[in-house]
Amino acid sequence: MRSDETLGLFYGFVGVAAFALTLPATRLAVADLDPLIVALGRCVVAAAPAALLLIAARARRPTRVELRSLALVIAGVIVGFPMLTAIAMRHVPATHGAIVLGVLPLATALAAAVRGGERPSTGFWLAALAGSALVVAYALRQGAGALHLADLALLGAVALGALGYAEGGRLARTMGAWQVICWALVLSLPLLAAPLAWAIAKHGLDASPSAWAGFAYVALVSQFLGFFPWYKGLALGGVARVGQLQLLQPFLTLFASWALLGERLTPEMLVFAAAVLATVAIGRRMPVGRRAR
Image (cartoon, rainbow, N blue to C red):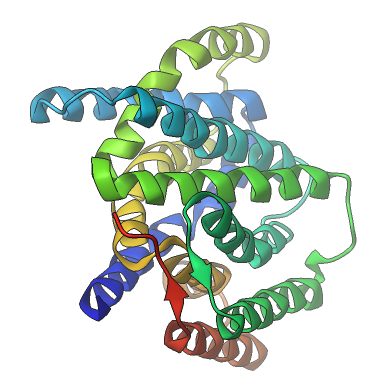
C-alpha cells in the first residue's frame, strides 16, 4: 500500500539520520581503541539493553526458521559491517568511507531481490545506479578517492551490510523491527564475549574522552536504537525502495557537521545533495514488486 511505503520512508529516514554519524564516531573511537574492541564491544554493550527490553516485553523466542535468518543478520550487521568498517577507519578518513555509503544502497537493493523476493523495475535500477554514481563521484571529488587497501575492508562491509539489512528488513515483517535487532544482539553475545576479552587483555582500554564518546554513539545508536526505525522502515516500505535513502547519509553527516560543529557548507555539496535527493524521489515513483507476507 502507498501509505505503508510513505510511512516506511519516514521511518527509514529517521534510521539513516541515526546512522549518519557512524563513520566519524567510529574514527574517533579507533583513534585510541583497538578496532577489534570497538567492533565487538559496541555489540556487547548494545546487547545489555536489548536483553532487558526482550525480558520486559516478554518477547517470544524465534522459531527455527527465524534463527537461520537471524544468523545472517548477525553475520551482516553485528559482526561483519562493524568489524570491517572499524578496521578501515584505522587507515582512512571518514570521508573516504563515503564510498561505502555510495554503493551500499545499490547492494541492499540487490540483496533484497535475491533474499527478499523483491522485483525492482528497470526504472528503479537506473535511478539507484544514478544515485550511487553521484555519491561516489562526490566522495572522489572531495579527496576521498585514491584507492587504498582499506577499500577491500570497505567493500566487504558493503556486501555484509547489504545482506544484514535485506534479511533484517524481511524478517521484521513477521517478527517486528526492534525484536530483530534485539535478538540478533543477544544471540551474538556468546560468540563475541571471548574474543572481546582477549582483545581487551592485549590492547587495554586506555582512551581519551572523545574516543569513548565515539564508542558510546556507535554502541547505543548505530548498533541499537538506530535499527528500530530502520528495520521498521524496511519492513513497511520495502528493502529496495527504503534502502535508497542511504544515499543521503553522507550529506546528512555533512549537514550535522555544519549544524553542530560550524563546518562550512559548500555550494558543490548542496548541488550534489539535491541531485541525489532527486534520484531518490524518481526511484520512489518506479514500481517495485514485493512478495506477499
